[in-house]
Length: 259
Image 1 (spheres, rainbow, N blue to C red):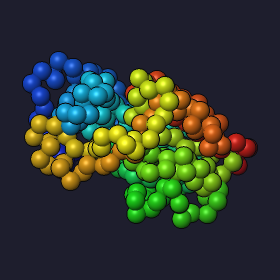
Image 2 (cartoon, rainbow, N blue to C red):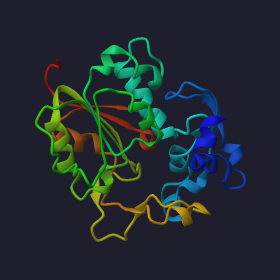
Image 3 (cartoon, rainbow, N blue to C red):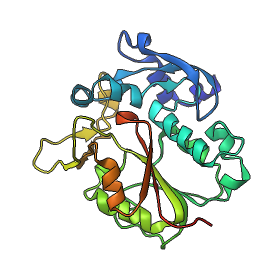
Image 4 (cartoon, helix red, strand yellow):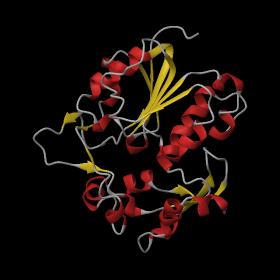
């Protein structure tokens, strides 16, 4: 496929993986690109320490890559949520970004949402920034600037995630949404700071990927627990969720009428 030839990193993710992961592959339709086919498990996307803590569930969430576009299970779940919230006739994100109503929205993507970013980039109203160059704890944007804010696996890496949530609330218009994921630990009743705990980093893979991702380690400041919806409500949002546990996608809405 031309996409694989143009993306050697994706080719490696689909083909270089632990022995036995093939048995964990799934088949289905991708909510991002719409392709029906294999979804490829690769346990080496996680470092050994992180995989010991979270188990195969997180490895599956961070892999099960669509063999066409490379979007992970986590990214596809975000796409499913966006299609549910905003789609008219669209059943995939690739179709959603071509619908007039969605194209009229002003969207902030804070850190690329995996390989979904290439699809979101078709939106005329997309503003894409990367943390920490744009500090989500002190956003440079005016109040009520956006209809939709997207983050994925970002809030756990900022020192003050509650302040980051207050900032995304501030830049949303009434009725606007912050749709996001974090690695929720179902064993934790309450969200906690990792201050004083052994350092944990995300980003570095296992196996041979540990060599090529060794500079990608991102320090984790917060472990999110089962009280995550309450944490988000305390920042001023109305909250609904799609999924549960590690599969959770949070939809945080700024109160008030949209438009």
